[in-house]
Image 1: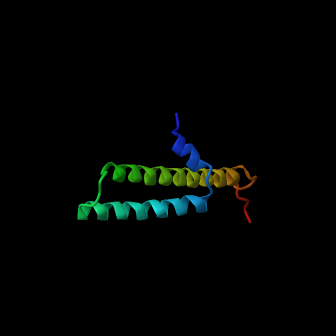
Image 2: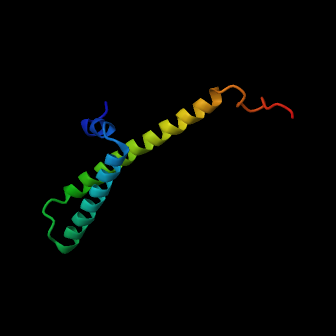
Image 3: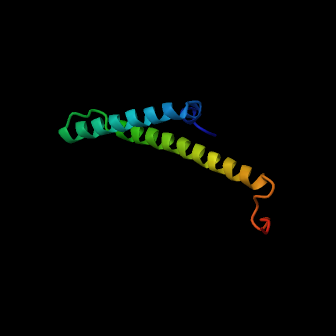
Amino acid sequence: MPSKAAAELRELTDDQLIERADSAKEELFNLRFQLATGQLDNSSSIKKVRHEIARIATVMRQRDIEATHASTHARATTPGTEPGTEKDQ
C-alpha cells in the first residue's frame, strides 16, 4: 500500500517536485551542519529528510519511465515505424 506522503507527492507538478527536492536537500545540508557543530537535538530528522528526498526522486523517476514508455509505445504503434517495415527506395 503506497504511503500518504508518496500519494501526496504524485499529485504535485514536476516543477513543484523539483522545488520540494531542492528545499529538502537544503534542509538536509543544514541538519548535517547542525550535527557537526553539536546543535542538532533530534538526529532522526536527518533520516526523515533523506527518506523524503528518496520519495521525491522515486516519483520523478516513475514519471520519466512512464513518459519514455508512452513515447516508445506511440512510436511502435505508428504504422510503418516498426523495424523491418522500411520501404526500398
